[in-house]
Length: 297
Length: 98
Picture 1: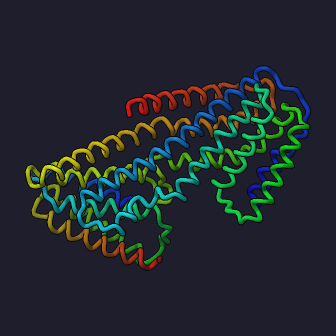
Picture 2: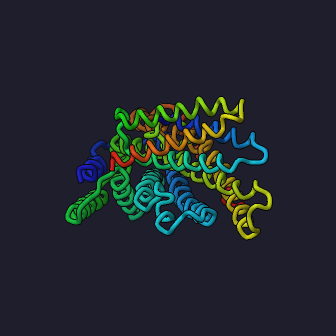
Picture 3: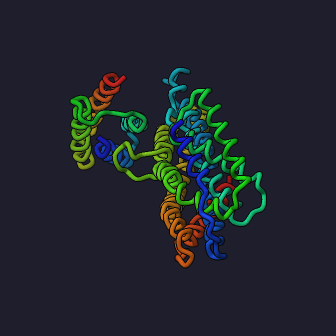
């Protein structure tokens, strides 16, 4: 609940009334567009990984006769509904934040701003661990209605100047969480995330499939057929994990940097927007790579 | 434990490729190590416990023996036995935190 109130408060405190230059508007729109894209990428990729983990574990259980139904249920625990939903919410929150900024900078749809603000607040809260009882949900909804009413009275520029500095910490935290989840770094186990376990699931399946594929005629053909398919799926997942990390890690690192830079851009009309443009370029590269990957599926 | 587990997996993967015909027991033990790594990422384990230290030490034994097995295939069986010991200790560690 405290998290929701904190997030709503910084949105609600739009007080400055200075104008905004064309360059500042471009920076906000560019940052917003890139953040919406990186958030959407994270949402979609996490959903894909969850589905792929399920499919790989079906192959795994089919290849291992020791697995009973109870054993099958325990496979892929890291990608359970709760874990996945919290991560997808982080991506969703970033996407909504980016859309809200772009709309505030260049759009004219007040309703879309309200919707994006609502989505951002709900998902940032869900992702950052605020598990609310029903009565607290009602209180949060009431706060959101107040926010929506206030937004109608505000000028967009004032809202941007107020929102960007106050959102920085929340956006940073969301980006940091996702950076851990899309990293394959072999640090201590606490710093290993979703993608790391996804790749381990694939390594494990590949090993299981090789037990059949590499043993000549020791296994019947139907078993071998499943093993070959499983091997292919595991190998694809291993390659995908490497590609996703290669593109996603720099994009999220740049998001963190650009998020800080955006605050300076808002405060100083002459501040360079080079970092924000670089962030936009990396996100375009990430989205382009993944679109190519998905087109081949 | 993390680095030891990573290194034990790396050695077993390497050992797996050196065997012709393939050694089925290596595949089996490697599976246990991957399962261990998938579990450990999900758990909030207190690093300073005796149980944790004993798993770390057992994995160190796997690494030492495994490196020798890469040079001397006569050491493969003892390497695989040491994995069983590490896995058994890991299960005790899990039980201690549940």
